[in-house]
Length: 136
Image (cartoon, rainbow, N blue to C red; front, side, top):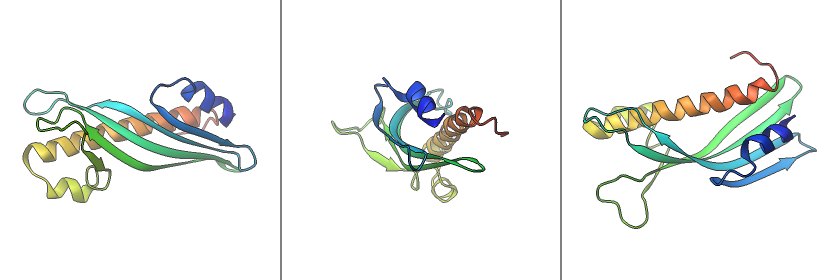
């Protein structure tokens, strides 16, 4: 089930950086990226952020366990961006501590990035849980 889900959802995806199946452990590891469209900010702009992430999904006797890790962001629309985009970790971007330490547009950017990240990851969980008929 997990192999088919991974193949159906990630094979051929140009943003996929790696996929590994482990039949013995009944698990899948995926490294990928997604372009998140953030909610409109106070200036009326909807920024785009590229989120890089990895996740492990493992079939257990109780269902499926999903672990998301190595989340980083690249803001492609930064006004002072160099040739190489700046990378931000999830810890310095979407945690409650990071958001509360920021102010102004930076705080708004982090809050919007958190909202879009959680929306995407909840969708990923919902898609994965469909193969096990798990409730939310």
